[in-house]
Image 1 (tube, helix red, strand yellow):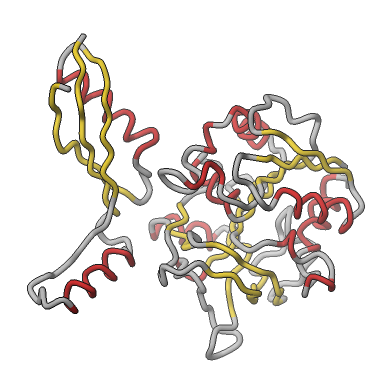
Image 2 (cartoon, helix red, strand yellow):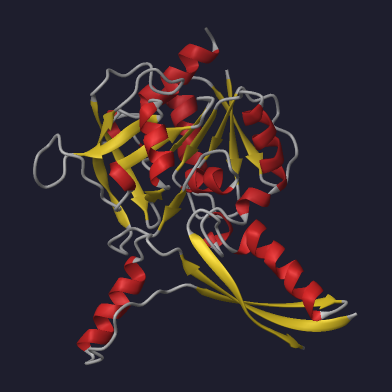
Length: 85
Length: 230
């Protein structure tokens, strides 16, 4: 068993209105970042867990996302990084 | 008839629900602690408003794993009536008792006001005491009330008469749909497939006496009482 640190990005599903992202985009435009086309605000979750290998750690984290960390109706998630902790 | 009212850490509508049941319709009510495994022979379960578990992660996401929720889900699956109000609606969606999800209000602002709801279906366990098209005055108080589901689900809800309440009476036409939170098709309340679980963002338990500004919420409790004791 080794310890792993896994980072997960959870974002509002494309096509679902994201008023927070829109508001941040407006603010960036106000600051002069005219090139900004779209912003999505989500969550960044870091899980530390013990697993036999990185694949097992990732598999387990995906299951956590499916069952709790992300809402399957409105959110998408991706495993951003898997590293030894 | 006995109403069981679930208290999660962070619930704040549980006492309002208690008063609506005891003072509003003169029935028995009991509190069900979230760590209990027993519904104490309740005939109806209420999932009240509030901020269970501080809305950590997402509103309702953690509460659905409370020990009492296993019993509530089993009760609902046996056909037991469940009234899920505000945060309770969010919990019920997370628990899979109702389709869809409640997202952050489109305005990003918490809304707390008396709103108009139109009764869209009277053929339910919870709305049979109202007239079709009747407009109710019921308060809302939420930051995450934007009902969202995919088109197919919403079409199905409408086709099957499962949209029970819709927000109306915005700044323009009094009959026009108007959503104070950006909800899909101004949906304020729905029932599940079997018709025994009601989820709604507005607070009928805060509108059971003219002293509170409205007694229009009473009809929901009277409707379920009429059917369950019938």
